[in-house]
Image (cartoon, rainbow over all chains, first blue to last red; front, side, top):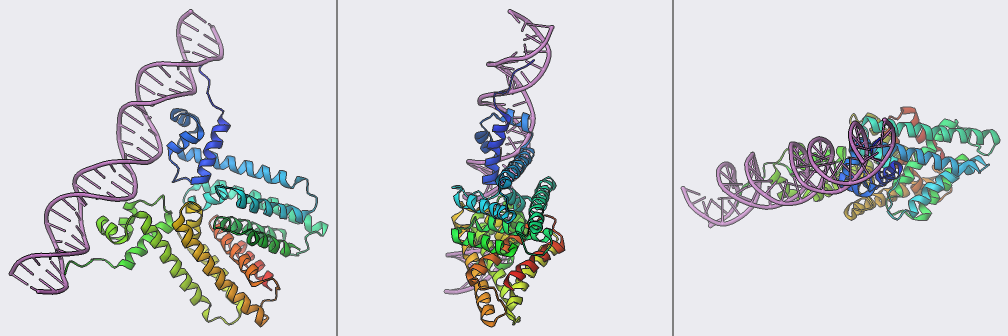
Length: 193
Length: 193
DNA sequence: CCTATTTCAGAATAAATATTCCAAAATAGG
DNA sequence: CCTATTTTGGAATATTTATTCTGAAATAGG
């Protein structure tokens, strides 16, 4: 029995996510958020809480979207090693084509907010664990089917792939060349064999 | 024919470097810098220019110190592949032992300031090029001596190692385990063979 | 010992910041 | 149509910010 919101929460959150993604936490002002979310100051505080709480919700939203995108990306691929390649290629392609070159919000958040922000630590570690278990699963399956012949443990190989995903994110920020990034992918794939 | 400075420029710059390293550019206030550098506001502006200029000098200083440390680290090692291992191990050890877990200033700067800050782009790319040529040199030498048997081009292998150095920096921030990071080193060394 | 010049200490400034407040607008249920 | 309740717009507030200014302190060279 009252007035209705004039905006869609998810749309507004998407605006916040893009701004935090592009500018990071400390360089984003509430004014930036008011602009990019397309809602009023009071509505912002009322619906999302303060800046830090909104940042957390943005990061969690990014994590969910990303996990979902990745799983969709590989669901129709039958060869396990090719699943890994698709994940790596997806990241590299994103790095090379994003005109704003924002990188990965999760990685950006890791380097900006860790180790001091406990809340962000939780989201980042949660994401890292999810990602690792996805990779481990794929690798385990690949070893069983003989598509991945490296005899190291699936966990170790997953760590290795995850390390390279992070490294590609960094290199992707610093005027990378296409061949440089795809060369690294080939090298990683060679390791899995 | 005038008053002398009451501080040592290099010492003051070291204080600034540590603060920017720990907190990043945007979360560091001039007050933080006045405190950590142990000098007066007016002296700071007079000697180092504004905040951005001071940041640049701090980053350049970090780059120089780091390059120097790395070259010293490997100068007494005769086996090329072991030089690479020493570089990787040095980074991991630093990540695991730094009580503040600051990570690498250069990597932090890359994710915080790129792609928009042209001045930082220059320092970062310069450092990346230096690092790559160091790695390439070592790998080329190792291949010639048969200590590195992977037949890929030294440049590609250098890219690969550099990618993993970056990845380790990220993983090193998020509650890593010792075995996880050293496991990745073993995997990278296995690739070089 | 002067004095020209630089450094220093901290107050002053002006802009940006995150957050709160208040009154007007909207609306769902009676 | 009321009215209780929520949302909204934007002004208000109180910090914090980077930078500049002013005048006193120090000192090297004459």
